[in-house]
Image (tube, rainbow, N blue to C red; front, side, top):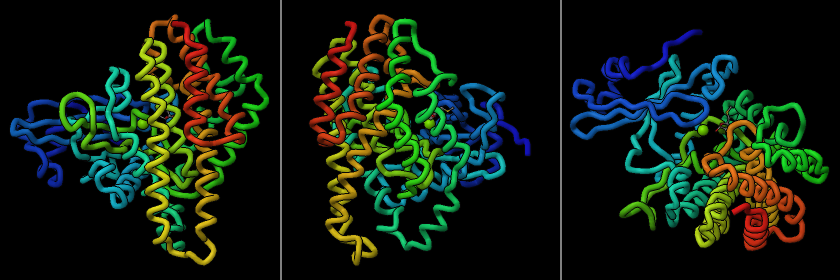
Length: 408
Ligand code: SR1
Ligand code: MG
């Protein structure tokens, strides 16, 4: 069914027609409407009125914005996003933005304005260090892992929610772009000429390809929890308690249109991959201390995730066979799988469609080494996780690969 797209001109009328929005902002005194969508899929507007009110309207287009109408994509993803945001917010109220409006006919969400936050990827690219955000994201993943799984939810209710959350087209994007195309010929891969050998070596690496088959299988079959599904640093907003960086007083995971019942370690791997990508940028720029700080975020996220999950564990619904021993094994598997998913996620941002600005905005001579370092990190990760999947091992391995391959 065709539907009309929001524009800066039509937004005041749209707000007037929807009282739940009119409560947040006065359509008669709007001073600014800015389209800020920097993702690959949707329209996103920030609207402000003269009295300081603000809100975000996000509309799903019936195609992939990055490519255009030639790549149709169900706007039903907006429903997945709103339902995931609401369920996740019920579990982690401070870590997810509030949604107060959903227009199911035009696929529009009305959300809390987070203009006093920054998109974390942009902040990292600017060299800022937001302390505590990685820990908060670990808590968010744990709240979702426990609260949307059979550990925290009635199993029959969980199955009903899982059925509603089946998100086939968005999962296909991930299956293709994250787990398949970077490791095979004929996809939408692109690299600068200096990295062509690195991309070819990735495809020729049988150990890597087999590991990506394992990762893809896990992604497609392990319906553990209603995961975020695209938890990179561009899906996190951060706010420093004072000034531009330092300790945060808020961090929120948003943009959960890829949510579905999938493997918990996929979200953790996405965070690790993007911390590593931020470290690759810092290494390329000669900021070694900041690169080390970026890699330490992996430990911060894992540590708070494990701690929060273990804290929730005594309240699990069925302790008869889900014993403490079971919990230890589950956490060990998730930590090891985090390496695997991180390897997939960092590779795709280097060679596949939809790259990361951290590396893309480097001068080409520095980009070469950053890209190579990330691909070497990914290839080492799938090999070394079986030896020791501890966070310090990952951090040392990645730091070494990024430094060794830097073209600075
Ligand atoms: C075609 S969509 C490309 C990418 O953008 C999103 O952020 C997801 O990461 C997806 O893979
Ligand atoms: Mg997104």
